[in-house]
Image (tube, rainbow, N blue to C red):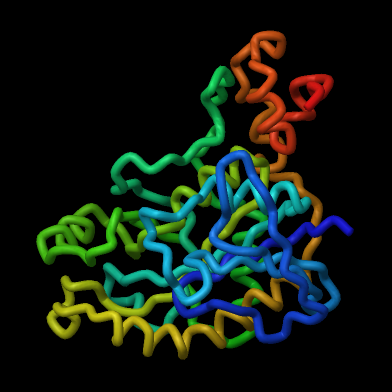
Length: 291
């Protein structure tokens, strides 16, 4: 059975407690191994695929994540919507630890991470002015309000390289730019999901005030984990509620992001590249080459 809904669990959210009929699925990709096996199952009557972003036991650093394999794996399973939970630090007083924030913009401060499926003889340029699916964003916000979570709609997520936390100078600079939260993972996921024509939303779990705050000038893993354990229950409730309302009609730009993005003539695309990217570009490139 095709699985239309994907869930990515970040720091502190390593499982979905209410997931039934579980099965581990290993999905091979031309980009190497995903973070681990996808856990498929039923959540509130919907078939979903769950992936722990950092692997079993949280062993993969943000810079080491194979973002392409993770998103490609979801695509080959048939996923059309991804709900991604992520720990973040707050850059504004009004966004307090244990709150949720649903960003609608990203700012890239990473250093050379691979964040496209394209290349190797196939060029494409997707629109990314609005990196979060507006339909999914609105749906998740409504669910979060219904669950009683303190949730903020909109804002910019600064994606830093890590694994170290920010210096105070960096934190103050991001604040002066008007940024809202800071994390280490979600930008590449969002870019690749758009290329794969998957609707994507980030559920940012605020764990701390980053080091700009006078009471949080020494962010520790212990502080982050303690708050994440409390945030995890809220996140699971929001994700489950959103899953129960999917699928919905996909009238957003995510669903047709590649329609005007591929610039390479179909006959010029190398067979191996065409084969590797078939789950993503097949409907635009004509007959599938023989393996």
